[in-house]
Amino acid sequence: MLYTVVDLLGVIAFAISGVLVAMEKRLDLFGVGIIALVTSIGGGTLRDLLLGYAPVDWMRHPHIVYVILLTTTLAVLFQSRLKNLRTSLFLFDTIGIGLYTLVGIEKGLDAGLSPVICIALGTITACFGGVLRDILCNEIPVIFRREIYASACIAGGGLYFLFVAAGLSAVYAYVGGIAAVILIRLLAVRFGIGLPNLYRNPAG
Image (cartoon, rainbow, N blue to C red; front, side, top):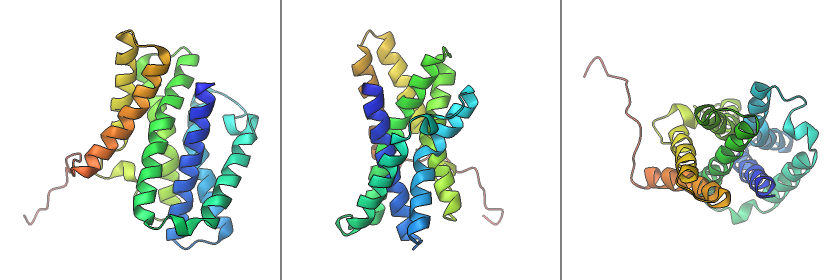
């Protein structure tokens, strides 16, 4: 039950982030819908393909597509309430990666995989939809910038397994892992913390 709720919340959060990016790029209604769909299901699709699941999750559970369509419609209709698009995009994207990280980890655990591989799957689930969204909208994906993004997913996933090892109940560990991803991302942006840039200007 918790897994289903978290999965749907992640779908909603990423659908809204996709709508916000598409509207910022002034795409038509069809384009907005495609970007919302890709953002919501891209990471989970890659995860399921890596695990050998066919058909992938959203094909086996069509209610996911209905949720994306409804979310997209509502986000477009009430776009005026999302006054600051950049702030709204950041918040929904951050919530999305937190939720989807643990969804991916849960899938890995169900497949009997090791914690390291589960964290990798969680990171793929959380980040790949955003990568596709940014590429289709002609942006450098956030995961390839200095921002703490994929590393927040990795850290939150690692904390989830530490919580479990420390004896926390599954629910608390699950919620704690989600909260850790979101909090790390929020704090990193708030205080301007980023990964080191390896580029060196030859002229400098």
